[in-house]
Image 1: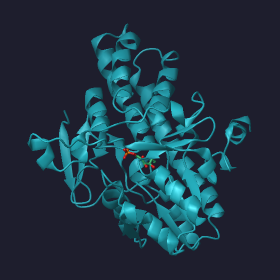
Image 2: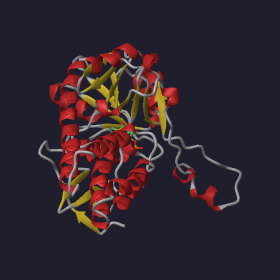
Image 3: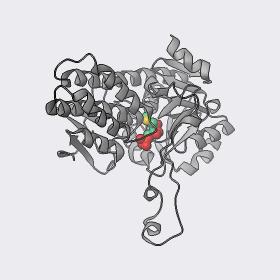
Image 4: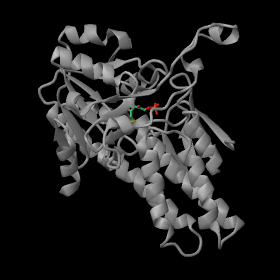
Amino acid sequence: MAPGTLHMNKPVIDMEGSVRALYWSDDRLSVLDQRVLPDQICYEVFDTVEGVAEAIRSMRVRGAPAIGIAAAFGVVLAARQRYRENPQEWRLAIMDDIRCLAESRPTAVNLFWALGEMQGCFDGITGDPEPALLKHATAIHEQDVQANLRMGELGSAVLSDASGVLTHCNAGALATGGYGTALGVIRSGYRKGIEHVFATETRPWNQGARLTVWEFHQDRIPVTMVADSAAASLMATGQVQWVVVGADRITANGDVANKIGTYSLAVLARHHGVRFMVVAPTSTIDRELESGRDIVIEEREQSELLPQYYLDNDSCVEAWNPVFDTTPANLIDAIVTEKGVVHDPDQEGMQRLFDA
Ligand code: MRU
């Protein structure tokens, strides 16, 4: 499905100096295959919407904002194809492609947000839709980078008294348009004096071990990786003052869906007097959902969790593999967005972000 694969010695770097998880070039979308990092740096080039949907489904591209941006470029590719097939009926035909993209992963709301944004352009288009849609997808990408830079400033100011932080999963340049959400705050905080950065390995897919520590390594920011199960012991040493994570969906009351294990960290943080920060652009806020109970949590294959032995043999062992969980707002000290910081989030505090 990918017409080309580019093996490289170094990743493509953007103007802010961070790794590009995806970029548009020569009328096609290139996606860094995150399944093979850090061993290989390999960009796959997609020129069909089916290819982009598969890249999201298979987690070549992953992380809530990055999925949304990829989907936006997927709509550009779909429009090109549908307009070629039938210039009069492309708006109708493209709805199948939008559905295909929407079904690629369920939890990160940025995917649905970006598809809505792209559809919002359809009505004003006359003639070939590709130039207008490409302009809009590019703007979505650029706005995400700007939001991350802003959140880096706002979040690092909140961390001003911290010497040690712990992050979970990967919420860096790889998971976003660039710079990162949680990792953007840590990058900015490191320049202002954070001394110790800890990252969980993030079982079962190991986004922390494979992606987060690789990003810090690219930036030459010293990082200590811990097994997920070492988090309580780490907090008990007093080396961590804040846990800083990203989000895949935040509901109207400030509940947060993020990578499985986030909820455990929030419970542990409260027990140890460690504060808990969530960093996400407002495109991650789903104001239509009242609380975290309404979020669809993706469950992935048992094979991501179970040793092959139990899959190959007639065994009575099975695995439950939810890949996100929901952290209630009352365990969160601050939600950082590009529009401002919500301390002790609740429904009113979240609403204020949109009133300004
Ligand atoms: O399953 P993934 O790797 O797509 O999940 C991404 C996450 O859950 C991350 O934790 C991240 O914090 C949210 S995206 C910046």
